Length: 295
Image (cartoon, rainbow, N blue to C red; front, top):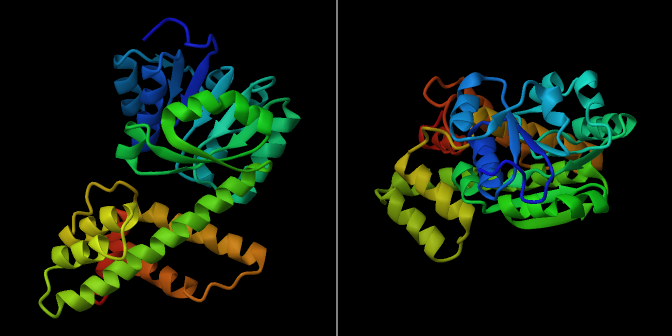
């Protein structure tokens, strides 16, 4: 990696889990000087060994011209982005790439503005392998000029940037709505596999039928295969995170006056899966096993 960024700006990345590590590596491979920070040491150590620079703290990371973050949930974001940390972003831009609640996004928008910084929301669509390949779909919302300025970095991490609104929290609401559709697909695959499997049909053949005829696309082809093979570990997206996103969709439905007919049933499925010792630490597609096992 070079001593200076390709464009002369200092960048930072906070949150080096399965998604964040891949995204940080994409930025570094593009020639950007990147300081990185993570709450647990092992992911940070691996990236430092690859030539990236460790940030001393979240505050140090936010002193970069542009910082990015990919944390697990609202609680993690709130723990990291304290008022003292946000104050270090004066005159700088932060790009929140995590799937957090619109309410949290609104609070961060206000907090960064009060500190004299800029805040953009850019949650992403894609699993860790997609992030590592730079093929994410990125949902962007916030100040148009700020998005313009970070667009070269987003294009390194994603194959398309979807510009949705001037209000950052809209991107978070749209991400939750997309995940709500994915959850429906997971449940539909699980139910239909359970029915046909009990009739003696090979689940792999049934999923091939779905994806080769009427239900193409990444969700059915990717998760359909996982469900057919029951390969839920290691999880690409933890089932607890799926439950979190379902709760976000529920909050957005309530805020917009929508009453989803399937919401109660999906909540019950996730709760059953999380209560099962064999499923609770699996990929979120393991909700299919609730129907297969008739839990």
